[in-house]
Image 1 (cartoon, each protein chain N blue to C red):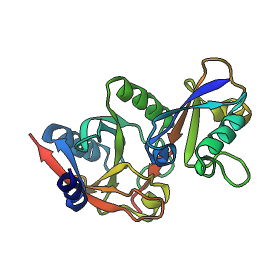
Image 2 (image 1 turned 30 degrees about the vertical axis):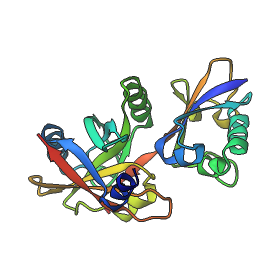
Image 3 (image 1 turned 90 degrees about the vertical axis):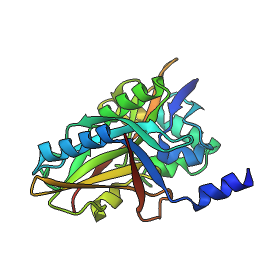
Amino acid sequence: MALFGLDKVLSKPAIKISQAIYDQIVEHAKDSYPEECCGILIGATMRVRCVLYIHPTVNTNKERSQDRYIIDPREIFLMDKEAKAQGAEIVGFYHSHPDHPDKPSATDREWGQAGYSYMIASVNGGKDVSVKSWIFHDENEAFKEEKIKISE
Amino acid sequence: MAIKVRIPTPLRKLTNGSDEVSAEGGNISEIIENLESNFPGLKERICEADGKLRRFVNIYLNDEDIRFKKNLETELKENDELSIIPAIAGGAF
């Protein structure tokens, strides 16, 4: 068991997602361009951190939807209930950065909440999309990248 | 009166990992005080120094945002359920 524990410490943080669900995030980001899209990641964190499905949401920041997003808390409330009933949980959130890098901005960090995966999709010119996932566990930490492991 | 409170991921470190806890109180302020006595540090994650709800936090009573009710003064009744919901926002720069 000690070896197992050591393995956990040494392994880099990662999150698993299927190609089909990953593609849904990419498509949502492209469709919303030049505005930011956003949504909720539902999955599990017990043995393997994974996304089982996503729930695309409306960007409720209407004044600055090109460089800001807000997820309606009611959507989070409802998805938390739904996920719990299925034995799953909200593992994080995704949003896009139109013509900006796939890295968390100062605004992302200011509003960031510990323990969630934040997937950020950079959409260049409405076509080229790259996605990275970020997480921090302690209030005072910076975001760290977690590897996205895409499965069939 | 004991009320069930749903705890979101960012606050579970303070509840020893529990995603749901029970708290005593007749209104939401009293619930938060009771939570603080059982799980020290929780109050400052929910309220500002002046006692108001932090902008990073929403609280739902059953299925309604308490900001549309009497906020932290909202009275509670038997079988009510509270959910602490994180505010999720950000943006490109």
